[in-house]
Length: 440
Image (cartoon, rainbow, N blue to C red; front, side, top):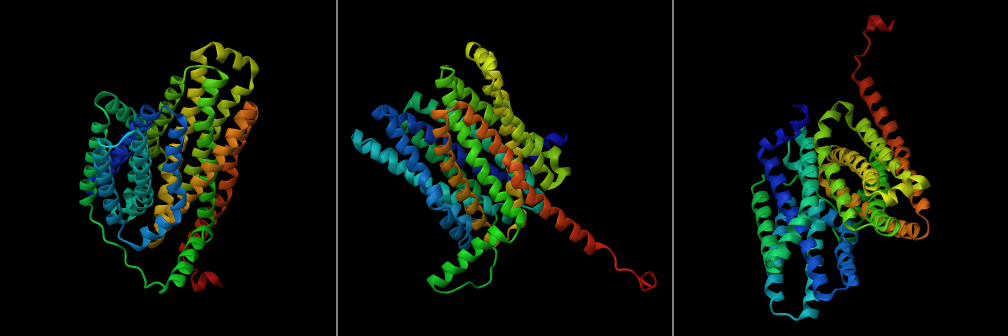
């Protein structure tokens, strides 16, 4: 069936090893982060300590974004992934050994250090893993591989925290640390068998300043040389400025403060968001005939329609009914979350695949790091924006969210124009030249 044709790519050894290795690594990351959050709260009982741990775990993704791209392009990508997975396995074991002997204050500091080390490694892995895909996967399998990685990644994003917390609450942090180390070791073994040869590149500049100028020139080239890529990066920034902050800041606020409902309802909506991403895995095969430009456009329209569902929060009679009826409340919010993340899942597959297909291998790490930097910047600004808006006006927050998501269509216009122009040029170049008789 066409719906499940993506899974055929798993027959390829490199694809299966990448998917299994990535799955083990992500399960270790999400499970450990959730377990450590509960562990930290058990140690101190302070939300501020948990907030500081989350901040410590976020900073490396922004601060190291450009550095990870340069390292990824200048060194062996497979070795970077293997070293980071091995280091995290070692860090998990060291955490286990030290936590047994330290007092409470020292354990809190140990959690911060461990989270920071994991985040530094993850920032390098995120850039490098995405960059290595076109180097080890046949071009015809790139879209399906990205679809598998993102779809299964959403499954793990939903199940990982549950597994991590259950493991911690059932048998303690010792088992959580051991499971984390084992999963990273499994990821190491899976990805160690991937055949990878570093692409040969022309000799670069010599000397620190010359290298810095060369790298900055490449970053500038990545942003400006192709209007489609510029448009796509702007679109990613817009997504993380409006969508993620609205979901992560707005939904728990609406559930607990506006409707004064139980926080478990937010957990339910988080699962719905993950489910939308999972089911996009089955939707992507039906969009291939549209091509990249139209698939991106249609998925953005789907995201806007999902965002528009939240306009119900502006209707007073509907709000009154939702306050009194949990089924109606969750029904409306579920519909909006599901549509947004179903469309976002499709959008994300074509977003990553376009970069894989259009950026040269020796520059792909820098391309991925730019995306990571813009996305992280968008989220930080979005968290501040929606934190302010929800504190002052629910109506303003919803309107800004819907208008912001609609702006994605406008940001995509340069992509459509540039893509159409390239197609017209390619078609003209393929037309046979007129014969001497025809030209008379």
